[in-house]
Structures are given as structure tokens and as C-alpha cells.
Image (cartoon, rainbow, N blue to C red; front, side, top):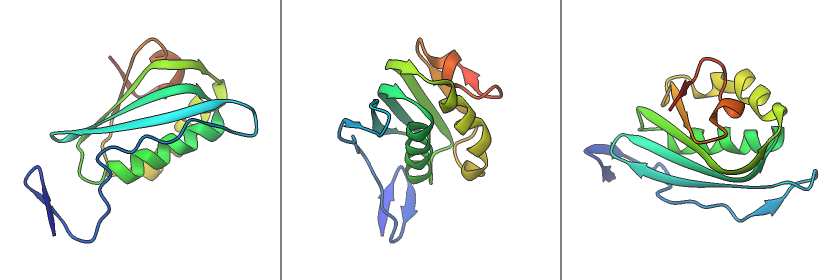
Length: 122
């Protein structure tokens, strides 16, 4: 049993900091997610180029790290570019996060390009 922020976790993997290696996908873009847990929120700092495939990685990082969080902040200032397919993937697949850290808050200069229309912009 693990205690974190007064909550118990039994047999669950908790990622406190899980930067992914900078990688190139089939389209040649680079993307990385840095995860930081804080109180009852999770902060994801995005880096590189995000497209539809990368958006699935972001959703996966949210699923893995939002088990206990009540809020999630997605920081976009370190993104180089946002492909329109990234927003489409997020809008169509937000259901996988039901009951976890919703609504999402997007921050940074690329927040408006990436955030699904129902999300909060900071």
C-alpha cells in the first residue's frame, strides 16, 4: 500500500515523473510529455510537435496519471506546432477520461489550437 496526498493506492503504478524520450513518429514529428503531480492535480508539459498520433500519447498519459487527480493542467508553451488532427483526437476521445481529472485546463500559447471546445483555457 502506498500513501500519496492522504490517499491509499494498492497495487497501482504511480508515475511521479515520467518524461518520455524525444522521438520521431512516422510523420517525422517529435513529441514528449513531462508529468508532474501536485496536491490533487496533475500537470502535463508538452514539448515538440503534436499531431493525431501524439494526441493519443497525451490521452494515455492522462489516463495513467489522473487516477487520483481532480484537475489536470496541460501546458502547451513548449510545443513547436499543433496539427489540427490533435484537437480532433482529443475531442473524440475525451470519454476515456470519464470520472478522471475533468475538465482539463489548457495553458500556454498553443492552448487555443489544442484544447477541445469544452475545455478551460488559462
